[in-house]
Image 1 (tube, protein in one colour):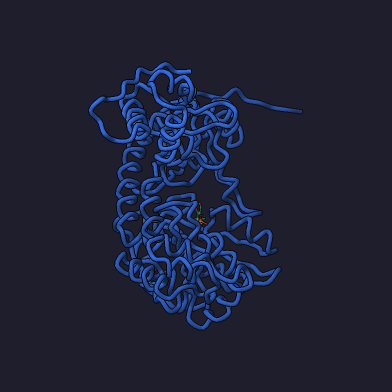
Image 2 (cartoon, rainbow, N blue to C red; image 1 turned 45 degrees about the horizontal axis):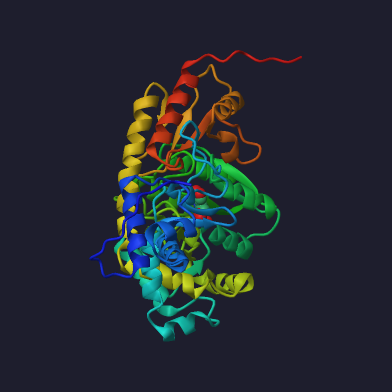
Length: 463
Ligand SMILES: Cc1ncc(COP(=O)(O)O)c(C=O)c1O
């Protein structure tokens, strides 16, 4: 138990439990109480302060409501470890500054609780609206929500039409619906040569063959796409034109136009994954702006706000809209209107804008760290991107490097995960700089990776 010196003010007229919660907040703020410190028992503190046990119980409950402390069953009340509560699902339970997980393509950690509380409070203002959220809506959701999201996106350079937009549970779900609605087992689809593992997994489950198309630092090459369209019978290409996962490639406006021209010639629809499209301040226009009838545009608020929100959107070409609406209905009838209402509130109150400012600043600092440590190596990067793409020097074999990094407490993702079946795997790894808990962990990871890259591995051979 942590011993804390408390003294209640004789002149303060606020209820005692509030005063105690306030004192706890001050002690946590000033660092006298730190993460995982155990608070005194209710009885001990009550005796010390000359208040009832009930008052301390209320004070601890108030501090818990404010997110300062947590009651652990059978163990007592502890100061919340803020770092721990932001973690992704399988990051380890204990923060260890000597370890670094570059594995997840997630926004950098920050405390979203206040923003969420405020937005939820505002959503809950209208009893009529709350009741509306608790009943079935059309599969397309509540009209005003679609209008709000479409108009926000239009203001941010994504030209979507509220009448054609469909909500989905994040970009991955959007992809799944498009494949379900418009492909059949045995079909071939095209993608960038290295692509998002969620696409590879989805294609495998739906028995689709993925053929990767040659790319450079701007993404897929128009001539290579033309050749692939001639070689394979294809109707779809899946592309991430902005901040591509894993290579960071972003297509210039000219490249976008050239790719769309090839698609038009071959009657090829583009599934545009724009999940990262809102991250850069000045990205070129999405493909949907240039050819709305050629493109299924998929976006989400997972990367620029919160992956746990699970709200995304799709705009299909107009003639595909009815079929996609039915697919959504078959999946889940509709996306929860409570979540789309919350999203609208976060958009209209500028919470997303503020989050984006934080993300961009944080990513700039993390990228500077990566460039400091890895400048001697072949690093592909783009500003505002969560990850960088590191090509290994000749003396490292890919699997050895990934394993040795893990043995040293540093998780990186192998190019193998991003390579569609039957393609050559380049000797490269993805480092999601956004994934470690803080910049100290990023730096630890970079120092260890640099030491590994600088060293020559002992060659391993077997008979
Ligand atoms: C390129 C790409 N598309 C889609 C997703 C999935 O996004 P969501 O969480 O919105 O389903 C990710 C997640 O990492 C991604 O990197």
